[in-house]
Length: 99
Image 1 (cartoon, rainbow, N blue to C red):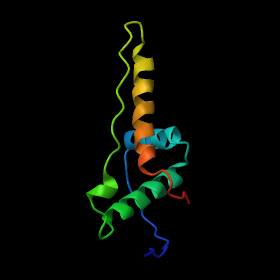
Image 2 (image 1 turned 45 degrees about the vertical axis):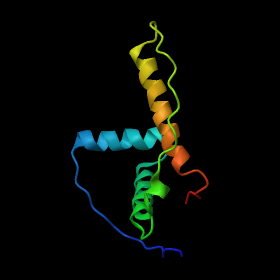
Image 3 (image 1 turned 135 degrees about the horizontal axis):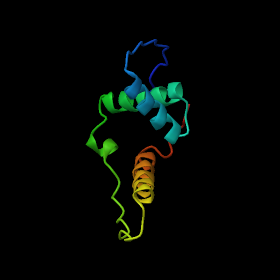
Image 4 (image 1 turned 135 degrees about the vertical axis):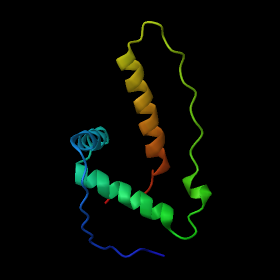
């Protein structure tokens, strides 16, 4: 069963801080803000489909983290953690075509 494509205009009001967070998230994903919002809207729509049970949304097994090195900077630790989270999230949607 396929879903029909529809154009939808949505207006959202947010403060500067929230906008900057959204821009940063889109940038980290390598997308524009409109593409990032569109991608996330598709994810929400897929989760809301009838029959989209927990098996579809099951998270992959978490990889063990490497031991923290004492001389690792906070910035390096954050970058490593962010990279792991982004990889796990991307693994959920591998094989799905990006439009």
